[in-house]
View (cartoon, rainbow, N blue to C red):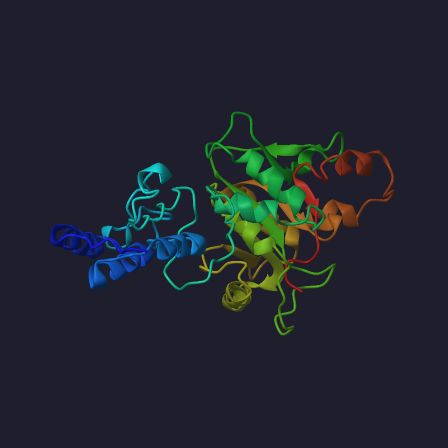
Length: 316
């Protein structure tokens, strides 16, 4: 079979085209530029091998992008335009929908990302179990303080002592800042400053959400005021008060009962809720009821879950 020799102008054109093409397209033109000839068998052989897939490119941070000119391939020519002409076929360009990757890199598995979180506090709360003892307390306080302003006719969680002889009811609130009181004493004993502290799981995130509404978190314990600094250190170390901004109410020199602490809290805040591990943490009247199942006790129990919350010790 006779070989057809390409003219000089065609050889020069192929040289220029090779510099603009990358990958196998440029490689396919080397025989033409070197010898200026290509046989029919060689053409068929090239077609049988098929073009190698182009090396796509990924621009980090911008996802799948277009192929830069340095590696771009020429558009595919129809098969009829090259058949029987003795010219080397130009491999088709990669489809735009093909995943692109750096040359020589192995394809990576698709990585899924969680949806954007617009409220980190709510996202943390939604991941917590509902039975951890503090869920009801948190939901109640967040609902009571959702607008950040004192609601008309707000009621305190503290009892009006004057109503205990008839129908027990809670005190009205003024314009004071809302607050959550948390009792640190385990049972009927005072908080142990020397016991290695361990915070209740998930409580720190719940308190962070409550503070975000402008509500104060106030800690109380049956300890003298001289222990305030040590309690503050414990709360900070456990992450329950990482910034050290929460007030701590303890017994003053002339005080002997926790009820006196509650009364002082009423003058400074509108107590939206009280959290403790026994009913007497809400009011000392529970320690003096003659009939724990009588009408007064039943009336008082109506406040549990509605301002009063029985929870595990916050630090144990």
